[in-house]
Image (cartoon, protein in one colour):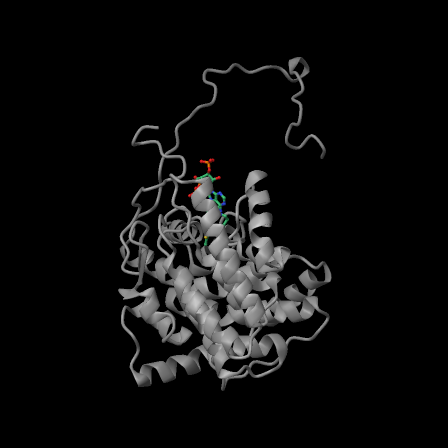
Length: 387
Ligand code: ACO
């Protein structure tokens, strides 16, 4: 492949950003200049969103006003709720419901201004996910609680129970950890859309569609399934060896950019350990640690030339499960976090970016001649042939 043809745009720098820096060789992630391990366990999600949008941490007054502002925007337009009810009747996957509902946020009053839309999107995503989850289970969505912070209110809207400080802190640590991560596929999608001077609602709706794919946001569920399948530490070696012998990939290991341990894995492992030690299922935590150690040993043995280490999804699964969150919501909760990064990138693109318009190499036929309809041969598996 020549320098000008790069099928997956690997290594291509398409814009500058002040939002996050991913160093795959050193295993370092900076979010707006802060190492992820410095920021994620300390910040509230509101502080992280503010930091991404504005470049600095908010003062106490700014933070209080911002918390009130976000809390005041948690309600959904009536049409959004109606749409969620229809989707729940058909039991569509939550990511599809989130994508459809995201598009309806253009109905919110004052929409169209990019900064206003950014606030609307971040405020509404948890409400959409929680309301939809309850509707799918045959329960009514809950009224918002303006007195709770962003993460706590999401947990409340899911179950109707006010979360403990530990659960709130655990979820905030996760949301902060995955709030932004360089030019991943969904962030790039959002930036491409606003680079045409389109609006933020369109950009973030597109980003949700990109995140949904199993190569991007879908691994934590299977990682947890793998731990459950193993069931006991003494079975880890047998089960993992069999998987590798069948050519299967061990979920939660390996990364396209990181050649060393994903720094987000450490932050989430520490958060999971704190949470599990404090009244959680320590047996599951110990099992996961033992599965991780065995997996790393076997991967080193199977692929000695390729450094395959733990990625963010392994401990995402453990932490979110420990927080009592269902596997089906792992990817939607990723979106609840990443919408802060997506909107920050979209605003940055509007301020500083150019129209993103790469080229393609044409590999089709040339110089074709028109054939009359009665002389054409049928294609097998033609698109539209079943219409
Ligand atoms: N288990 C077993 N073998 C693996 C794994 C794994 N988890 N990851 C990579 N390999 C092997 C591949 O089979 C390949 O072997 P080969 O050269 O003999 O064919 C070699 O390592 C290189 O694989 P690539 O596909 O080139 O690795 P890449 O860096 O492109 O893939 C990916 C990264 C997709 C994450 C991969 O490691 C994987 O599938 N991991 C499991 C799924 C997972 O955890 N995904 C979440 C990633 S984090 C995120 O997206 C937020």
